[in-house]
Picture 1 (cartoon, rainbow, N blue to C red):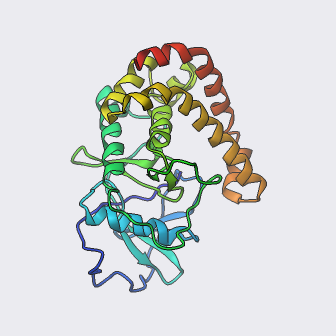
Picture 2 (cartoon, rainbow, N blue to C red):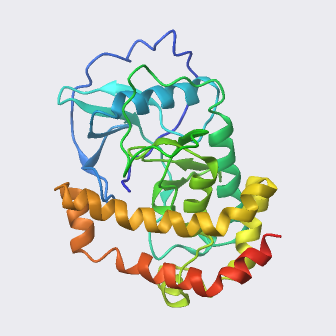
Picture 3 (cartoon, helix red, strand yellow):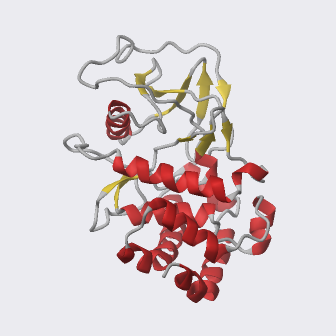
Length: 286
């Protein structure tokens, strides 16, 4: 939901770089717009954002991804003198609505699904730190195959100059099932939006059943998950709405703003669309 931007290099986490662990001194700050959850600024080639109890767990995940050579996630560089997390910055184009034409092609959809699969597969061997804390909307699900990103929508993707994609904003990362991440990404990239909303956001009457199948094929969903994908998308939308309402009711200012701005009206329309097109979407996945 926010606009942190990063590139990933290669570093053995057992041998931290000389800069890691040293407080970064803040110089000129450039606000990064488009985020809903955290205040994010750019300082030189780094990104600074407010930290929370979940930050050490997220940084452990990012260091693992860097170590195994996954290049589609931020580098965790430590903390600055104001106790904000420091991430590396990625030059590139962030998904902003209405999306530019190259963001809504079938090729882009396939690339996103492939990147999400690589992100999940790169977690093999990752052991969360003892007493890991994650920021999430609710209790952990019963099936926790991976650490889900939970918000892999266009506004959290960077289109880099070389044509590759970077996934940003891991504030909501937490344990979950692969299909839960796939469902959210499919919802926001196919997209499973009404025709009116799709056109407003940059798509031109997308063929939802065909593009959903394309996304599932590109990710490599197993038959069991293909069978339950549409139901999971619906559950993911419901969880999204209920989670935001719950966080707003608890007084989280970021989520209070989301509710006050009326950002929950579109997901409610999406639920009605899912119910109307459920059979066509499920048939496309056979």
